[in-house]
Length: 375
Image 1 (cartoon, rainbow, N blue to C red):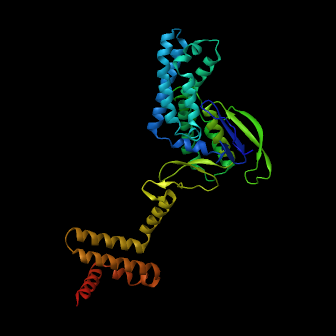
Image 2: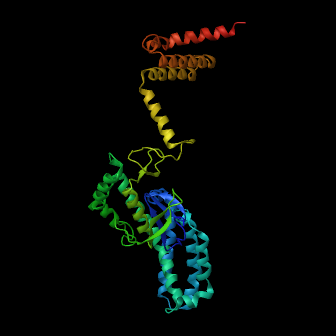
Image 3: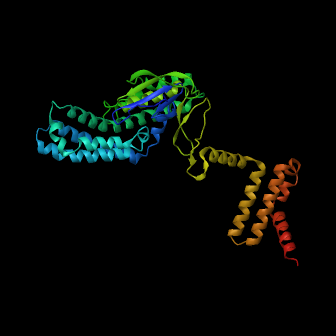
């Protein structure tokens, strides 16, 4: 059978099939560490909405557990359903939930969050009550777990991973040890809201077994695959982070768009391969390379003289000292001289500086314009 099949993923449980440096979720393959890196890119406003709905669910669930009044329970049930539905709308934009079947969760709402279920949900002997409050507990704590993990992983990347000279398992292991045993890190964690709920851990709790599946790269062969099941979203993200580090994968902040991306080799890249916010025709890597080249050009003597002269030409035009025609011709000549200097070292070391002087450049431009005006 293929990897990632029949995992039965839902709001209360996430399952991964782990094989080499890949993980499989619902039959799709992702590099180890993918989910831990990508959860870092959620917008603050979206995260705040998620936390708001999670808090509202927790408050109503607590009130429903305490009450013995049927009318009160029946009054709270549609309200908590609205909060859960709103939470699902936001949560299903987050990995891994965005890869799951949301319709299955909506079926749970239709089955349990309705007037006909009030008596069954209030009965302490009915199995439905236990499932119902486990479901509400999951909806309440998932936003807290996501928030706590984002804070922890961001602290780890910016304080430790970012400074590494090499990006491999050994360096990642040392960085993880130094970070996650530091008093400063745990001081930050202890001062988060509800620090005892969904606490970050380097020892995630999970259920693990083995399944047999076809080799993803050689379909005629079979392999042993570790199937790991998580009943807590914090355990899921912590495992993915550590599993990624084990295979030399780690989250990294793009220096252009400031989004997180996953590095998968020993290089220390500055930019991701996503689209640059400054220009959607370029990736961040392409945009970064272009800006780096421009910065280098500023220090090149040929470009430095070209920049100085063309800035002067534009200022003269803005102040009305030269005509628009003379501006265009002078800029064209300056570009011609620059390109020749870049190709001809003798010209760059000799006549280039003279040709780019203001008066000779204007004189040559005027001569060209006069030539064009001759019949």
